[in-house]
Image 1 (spheres, rainbow, N blue to C red):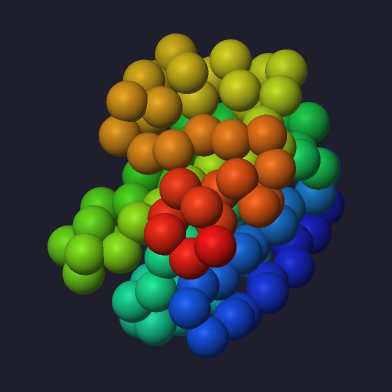
Image 2 (image 1 turned 90 degrees about the vertical axis):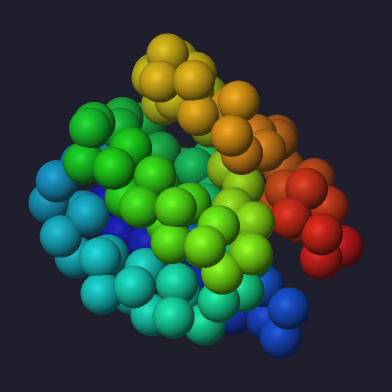
Length: 112
């Protein structure tokens, strides 16, 4: 469990570890709101996430909607297994870029 944030001049990356569930979302919500406030493209790095639930999906969707209103893009990278299956089942890949690596995600949001 846990997350790290890498803020660059042009974008930010938030990387989660373990489960992205309601408890994790509760801890990360304030930081995500701050990243949204920055108005810069945001990459969710899920390479360390083993499980995601509706709270985690909701956090990503919230960031996508808020940043889209500011004309900033959101991408997801590194998702596999259960997280990737659930993200695709919700069809989020139709609205935001999914990639294997943070580098690819940065290209997708226009900062690499």
